[in-house]
Image 1 (cartoon, rainbow, N blue to C red):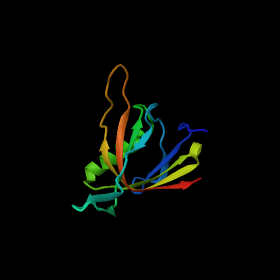
Image 2: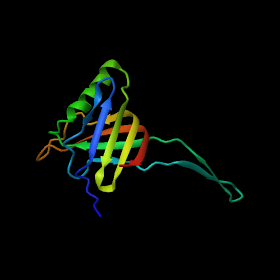
Image 3: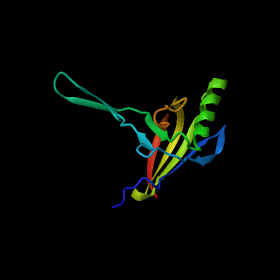
Length: 142
């Protein structure tokens, strides 16, 4: 079984900035992108010991980690600076193909929530992280 992430393809578009999807490149070696676990339901236990539950909508938070010399940093820098200068939100969209597991993920209505304003300078420059919060992250086979 192949579980490599080396051949993943991450395409990001921001309609008012990059209407044509851009391929992200220059990921960090130990952390290209990651999503956090989500709670899909709210549960409560009644005093009589009966469990009640309900579906709750949720945000899918994703962290993208790029090397400090990644050509894709420009995309995130422009996205963040445009939001700052216009005091407006520019939602993005993405598709992520992971050939090793034959899956594609469609990311819908993403908001750039957190950015690394500059790399940390240590022995060498350290990777930079960006957090996008997505309305939906839907899997499909490829």
